[in-house]
Image 1 (cartoon, one colour):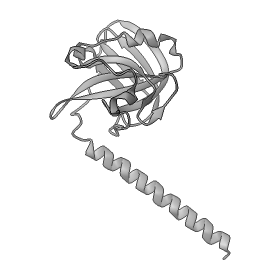
Image 2 (cartoon, one colour; image 1 turned 90 degrees about the horizontal axis):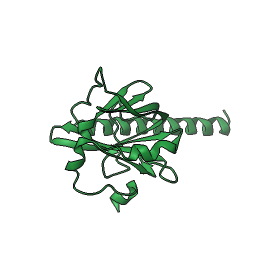
Image 3 (tube, helix red, strand yellow; image 1 turned 120 degrees about the horizontal axis):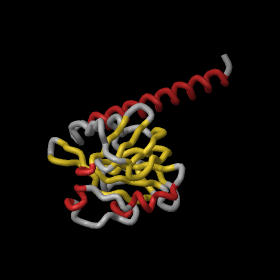
Image 4 (cartoon, helix red, strand yellow; image 1 turned 135 degrees about the vertical axis):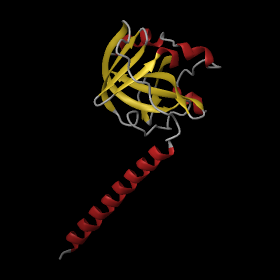
Length: 182
């Protein structure tokens, strides 16, 4: 057996160990977030009239509001996915590749642009972020969910969306998500 064989074997073992540790860390993050929320709201049969959209693009991910790097690992919010975003009179429907996330209007705080969310950064406020609340064992958890549309021309219209939970937010939204942690 040559030195190349042993080198290749060591590299393969190290890569497998790193992948195993990453998987273990992701699973532990999901377990530690079990108390973030009870269950996500179910989409209604009749969501109301279409107000905006549909927008096609990529679901970036969700974070605990106020920390653009505290990515939520629990399904269905934990994984990036191709998605379609549609605003209805009763809420926002986010259709992911395998799931549908419903953000009811009473739980929506606001929609804004951001340059960073869920450890993803893009130039010029290219991420549309919906801040919303979901019931948790301790009351409510504020969540920021990010979406990067294929066509960003409608972003200003989306930013005007406000939900019924907007009055419960004490301050104005930050102009960028990185300002929250400064």
